[in-house]
Image 1 (cartoon, rainbow, N blue to C red):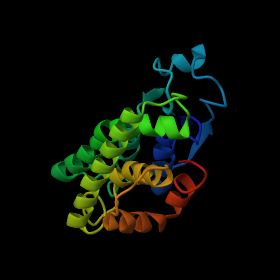
Image 2: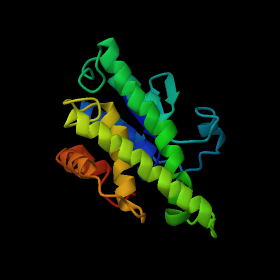
Image 3: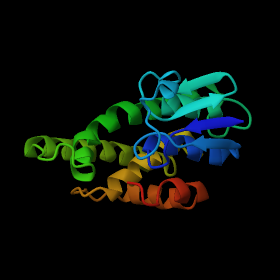
Image 4: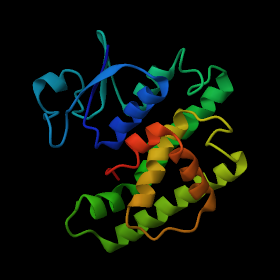
Length: 207
C-alpha cells in the first residue's frame, strides 16, 4: 500500500493525489504540515530532512519532492499514458515539469505569499509589481505553447506536465492579480475542468 504524507491543502501534495487518481492507484494519506502533525517531528524528519510535504512511502522505499513522486508513480504500467516511455516524448514532459517547478514557481512566489498568506505583512510594492509581471510573462509563454499544441502542454495527450501546470494555472486564476487576456489559457482550463480529478484537487477551496 502506498502512503502519502501531507495535507491536501498543499499544492504539491495535490499533484501527487491527482496523479494517483488518474492512475487509479490505491493509497492511504497521513495529514502532515500546517494545521496537522508537525513536519519537524523526528519521525517525519527521518523521512524527509527538509521538513516538507509530500513524502511517499512505498513499502521500505521513501521518496520526497513532488515532481519526483509523480514521475515515480507514473513511470511504468499503467502510467505510460501520463509519462510516455518514448525518450523524446518523456523528455518533453520532464522539461515542462521542471519549468513549472523552477521558473514558474519562482515568478509567483512573492506576490502569492503576500496576497494569500500575508507574508510579509507589509509587502514591498516594487517586488509585488515585479512578481506580478513575471507571473504574467510566464503564463503568456505557456499560452503560446498551448496555441501551438491546440490541446495540452506536450501535445494532444494529457500527461504529468498538465497535472503540475494545471494546478499552477488554477492558482494564477484564483489569486488577486491583474491578468492579461489569454484565451489559450482559458480553453486549457476549461479542458482540464472536464477531468473529475481536477475538480477534486484543483477547483475546491485551495488556491
